[in-house]
Length: 386
Image (tube, rainbow, N blue to C red; front, side):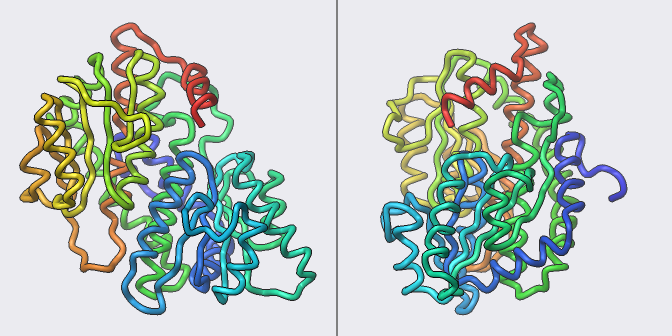
């Protein structure tokens, strides 16, 4: 792991943490994921959104044996009120179901309940089924959740921030769970790509390293751009922020929305996800961030049109600068990528990394203005919103 890939230290730390994971743990979890017909995603907050974003790419695969059904307990089609109730139907439908959990602390209630419920079902079966397994990506391999998963599957440890003391130097450490949540997003994305390409588990870390060599300069280029500085000017102003996307993009905007609210909420502003139950009409001067690989998704283009008519400002991130959405936006970031229909895309993961420094730079800019934002304030907002 020679040198740095980015001018943002926390991005370098994410890469280093990923490349230090134990290869035997990675291989075990990779093989379970590869063999599963159905994946049930578990987690909380940004950890769940990063897991959903990665798994959605393999669910969209159009190549026969690589296809997998991907569910979360909140899906309308989930066959039960909880994992214990759903397990019998999942056993009937699928040859192999993997309960895959992403939890940095291993202490969140929702994924713990999922693992408890499935373990209870397996104990009732008394060894009469081999159709289930559990997987966990975590920074805390001694948590009660990790112990359940170890008894019934595989745990992969990915270091996060650790016990670093609170700091105002967010460029070095990220904000709260950035190291783990962004790290798992890239790791799981490369795992789904490796499965699609029918690669061995030992190639996953090669894909991670190769991606960071491209992603680091890409982040630095955009962070230092006029577009990014314009975004920071808008975020520093008293205005609300709206974020939108469909499918995988929606999982990414939710990851960004959580962090932005921690900062904007401190300023008295709000952050909304488009078409949420509490999303109001925008005001003149509000900011909308839209993500769409094609830039042609009709609902997303429609959101842009409405926002512009109300004198809002739109930033779009698309896979083509020539797309309809890109041309209609006030500000635009293009992340072009050559992929065929039905193949996993890195566009969504890269969008999360490109937008991640916004909260970091905003917190540091406010500090330069004399408005220091201590991390215990961010944690307070997190504790009452997650």
